[in-house]
Picture 1 (cartoon, rainbow, N blue to C red):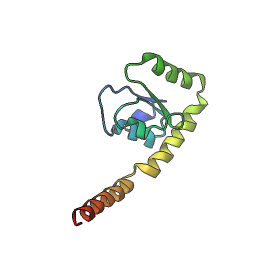
Picture 2: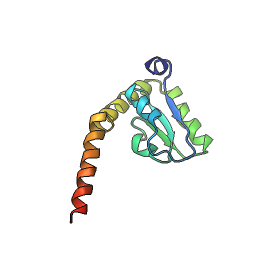
Picture 3: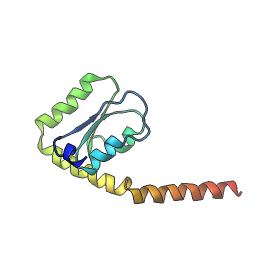
Length: 115
């Protein structure tokens, strides 16, 4: 995967159907790539629009092209937003964080059932 991400500047995830947690976005963040994705499913939870990429309305080619143009006109933002994406990944989406959140959820689930 790293060799693929070494050859791209920005990831575009133009999903039209709900995807609760697209791994393409996680991979992009891990490899310091900003992401442009549709405002659908879990994508807005992963992309902090304006910080590590942008979200846009599904089927809105005009919004998508504006975000692509942003990176063409501001190439220095690619590295900056990519690093922010990796920081967000490390704070919210590592395996350790997933495990901690999952165990917390399960623990609370059992607590609520014992009432």
